[in-house]
Length: 402
Image (cartoon, rainbow, N blue to C red; front, side, top):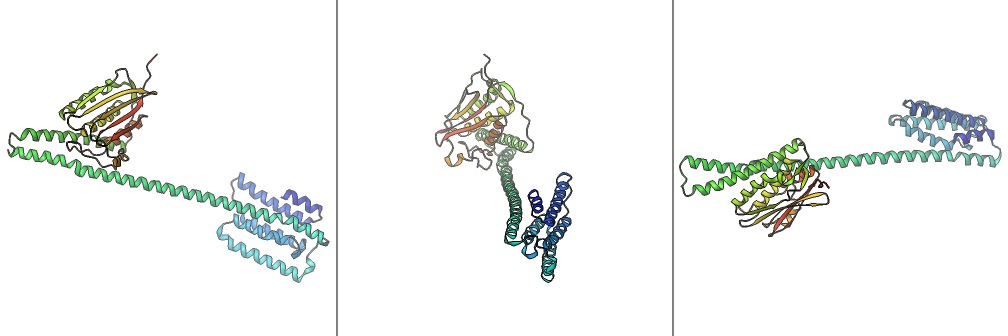
């Protein structure tokens, strides 16, 4: 704007106005340059006093109350308030209002001090028309700056609120998990130990009949095995939450990696009168962590045994689909109720009782999901309540060499 008004005022014979515009432009440039490139804070006092002096001189040099100086005063004050600290606002407002009143009083009582560079209505018309864009553009820029700053602060506040909401949600989830663990430790882990304690006390007191002893020992062994699996899952899950376990991905022969696990689970299934069948192609090669893969399969098969009644069957199959190995553990057990399927992989899900009243802790499937996903795989299931379930995992496979 200075590039336009300085030569225009010179051409119109308004030398004082041209000089005033030049000085204002110099003050602006000086403040901007040192603030932008030398990281020095602009001087509000210099900026404010420069406006007072220049507008005061320009008021008398450009027709006083009949000139265009009065149009520019409010815009300059608005700009000053926008860049100055809040604590200075009232002071600048009082100073500018008093200066404005004093100048007009002087112009009123001493009219000879006021110069009229324009003659006729045409000159005054041109003066007003050319001066009007200055306050308008200034107000536009300041409002745009204020709106942009407001929107930026608003976005920051919204992001902070979202972070607080997320943190609150995570905290609530953490509290739920803590309560779940406390429930496990206080009830699910305590009950089997009480049974063992009671049996040992009866045994020590010779209060057990010989005919009852085999059945009690069978039930006690089943409860102990179940408790061991519960404790194992609990320890694995606690470790996974406290420290992220290292993942050792290797190229594995699927059948060789799972043979010992499946043989052990087959023995447990036979004790319950369940047929466990696995037919794994010994040429399938996967990329996985051995320990994690064994834990996942062990939990899936143990769950199938738990929820399959005597005389039932469990099948384990594997096939290659699109560069992935799909391993499926299916059974013809009790299945999963539709209302429970949504939370099946969450710690908040309530563990169900098996067909022989076996009880887990609700961590097995959560561990399966976590450990499979850490290996770059995925897990899913299909279940019809009363007819059985099929859990399947997808894990990276190594293509056969051509």
